[in-house]
Length: 240
Image (cartoon, rainbow, N blue to C red; front, side, top):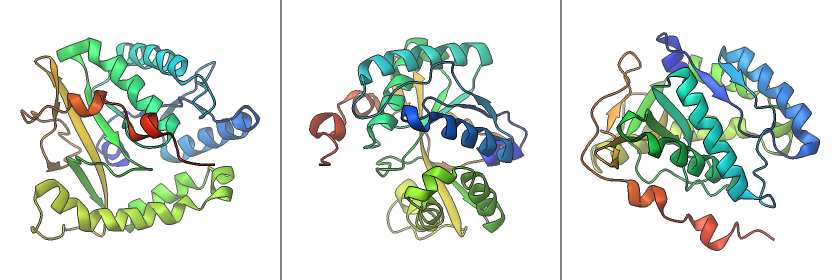
């Protein structure tokens, strides 16, 4: 997103949830500070969704689908970037499924959908973005605004370590095993799908060009993966 912003694209960040009720005031302040550091536009709904493991996730999914669909219509969105429906975290998966519910009825008029993975690896990455240490520091500066979340786990270590791993694994996952590493020290991965002809089609594997971020997709359908129950839905979080 920072690469797209640097090329002149407008970035709007929808805060789907602010966590548990006792944390919402703090997390809203942190979200606002983080957005001020990146320059992203921030939208906080009047009633953020409750997407914890003990909440009514079906109701939250329906609420978020309506919210996302309305935002896409109002802002004439070209790309939606969200968690994927198989990210293991119950809340992240709800947002992913809500995005699917919001965009699918738009059919060929739907914006491109880019998905990220955090708690589970993306099985079908199609986009890779390389970046340097200056961009990493910008990312870490924005992340640093979320002080309360960093107290429970130092996600700064994850951001840097994963970015290094992506630079090694990403090129082979996208372009074929045995092809060797890429050209950057750090990288981020995403999966792109595009709705066309009644189906969600997998994006074309490529290095992201932020000046021209959209290209024609492949003919490979990913609808079955998007709509099938996730491991979390089938087996829970497996936590005590």
